[in-house]
Length: 472
Image (cartoon, rainbow, N blue to C red):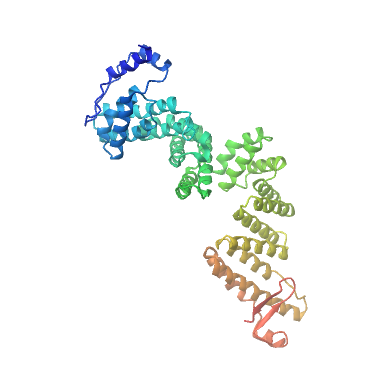
């Protein structure tokens, strides 16, 4: 008889095969340490007809949720021919989970918890080369087993498995593996904020990016779930305190300094800072500037724009925003396009006093958002246009021009009313601007002094504004 057959026989003797037993049986592994070492080194166990029959038995029981009935035939296969079928591990996880929940004896619960984790190691040994569920995928299952059966007591081990799995699988990761990576890493960060901050941020980035890719994939049946879970992990990160700009600077200042030629690292840091709205940070500026020199992207261009604005060079900021707009269009990141257009509009209005240019960018942002069916954000653009109108004097400075210049307030209030109508977010601000600027409308007496100009019910506001408005 071959040695591997003797080993298999030894295991069968150690674990009686009670395929039809109805109650789960505690089975102790009685193989000596020396024999166990030999088993690992031997060829894969022989798959017998009895193994195949037991696979069918436990699988049928699992289908009917008769987990106690499934245990004995499953255990027989698991210990004698663990290479027979992947269902040993997929069904086995359900069996062990059900028995763990039903068990009251602490020793039995500990045995089942240990088994749940060890099962994944055995699955890696025999099925780690599976093209759909390879070793790295199974490591994610092992991480989940640590979490489900041990809780916080094994979070360090769980995090190592989950991180390795997600780092390798990316957007192909199981949604729950991505979520648990953030949960576990956050719990460890709370235990040691100084020592675990960088690790938590890196884990969050991995998981959030993967969930974002899954949510954006229309062919992914879990896209909707991934989108909801991304909101969840983003919220966890937002409340964690790790997103504090000063803390990020402590972590990433040296990283940026040491990676000025590492485009991938610089882009990741820039995206992180943008996501948590730390775009006034010098570290963010440094990352964007270095990345932009290596390979311009919308994030790097936008970061350089912010840096230029902070330095007071608003003309340069507009040039960078123009680059960001073009690059974001190439990436089809149209919401980013709308944001960059608004930012350019704001600087043109507020800092450069270039009102026609400000309107051009604001209208561009409105058009971009409209094409996406988004109303939020349009209101602020209409307010920018209204403020540009209110600041203009298109009719000169003589007595007649002084009266006609007041017509810009009619046009301005039109825009504030539009802002209030399309975007509830700016409703209070728009109402206050309407109240403020309505006081400057041409009076009845002033209109009486210019009967030719105010002869009808409407008025065409000239100059660069070029809009018809109602006389009020």
